[in-house]
Structure formats: structure tokens, C-alpha cells
Length: 242
Image 1: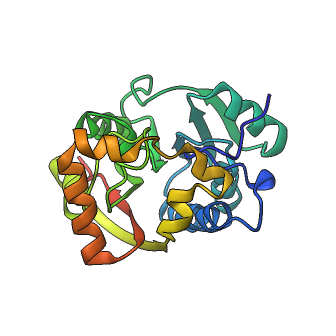
Image 2: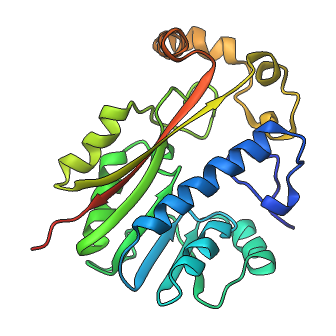
């Protein structure tokens, strides 16, 4: 059983339909995030947490041939696909659902892209990341900064640019660099679920809005401000030296 491309939560590059925007365009955004992460990674010990099928872990390893990359994910199917299609001599695959198993100061760089929005307590997850970082180490993470909880049933927390930056600031991290991304979308195509990956969108969205009117207000506000676009922010933070 291989990881499937028709998932809102996972991309398998070699299985994508090149004619589907939600696949190819989303992959391009992910690759740009990983290139940004590679440009700001430091030190010999790297963790790519929630690595999926590890195509990004491989990119990190290629950019840092002197480093050891630990690629961890909760999904057994994703890691099986990683071993079959994206194995790399410097990438070590592990099954794990968070940073609690990391000893303090274990990593010089932690990369975790499109992960923090999945948890109900993002502050606690970032605190785990910071604990696992060595002094002077870099945390590189990304989230959507337009509403996503309404459309994606796997997401638990909506962020704005300021609230995401505040996560790092609350834990004493300094911003090194940022990458902002904008992805236009067709509401007709999304609501019609025309593409394979969009099948994972929340069913009965109107009923969800009826039960969560604040989510509808956030969606309306974001649409009035940004139009039909999804926006993402990737931040590279530095943990101060002791």
C-alpha cells in the first residue's frame, strides 16, 4: 500500500496528475519552502518532522551533504513510500508523532512545514521544538495564514502572520528570515471538488459554518481582504546562545 496523492495532507510527487493545479501548484509551494529551509539550515544534525514521503528531506540532505537528516512522520504508509521512492544515504527515517522523544538540544535545525496548524495546542509543540534545539539552532516552520480550519478537516488552528510570528517570540526565538507565498484558487473548482486532491475537503461545509459562525466570519473577512487566495508564511527562527 502506497501513500495516496488524493489526500489534503500528503503529496507524493511522482504520483501527481500534472494537469491538476491543486497537485502541481501545491508541490511547487512545498518545494520552495524546502529550498528556503535548506538555505537557512545550520549544523550537522537536522530534523524534518512530519516529513511525509521525505522528498523534502532528500532535498535538505542534498543541500547539506555533511549533515545527518532525521526524517520523522506518524504515517507508516508515508514512510514506506519514502523508503521505496525517496531514500537517501544521509536521511534516516523514523516513525514519530512529535518532538517529545527528542532529547534536549539534540538538533541544530528543526524543519516542520505545514504541521503546527494540525495541533490544538501549537504553543506546546513549539515549546518541544525549542527544547530539542541546540543553542544557536534554527527552527524553520510554515503554516497557512489565511483560514484553513473550515475547509480542511485535519487542521485545528487558524493563524495570521502576527499570531504565527508570536509563537516564536513567546519562546524567545529571533526571526532570521521569512518566506511569504500566495496561491490563487478557483472557488468553483474547489467547491465542485473537480480535482482528486480536493476530495479531502470538509464535507457539508455549509452545515459546518452553521455550527461555527465565527469560522464563516473569518472566511468572509479573508476573502474580502485577499480575494480567492490561500496564503502561507514560512519563518526561520534562531534560538539564542546560552
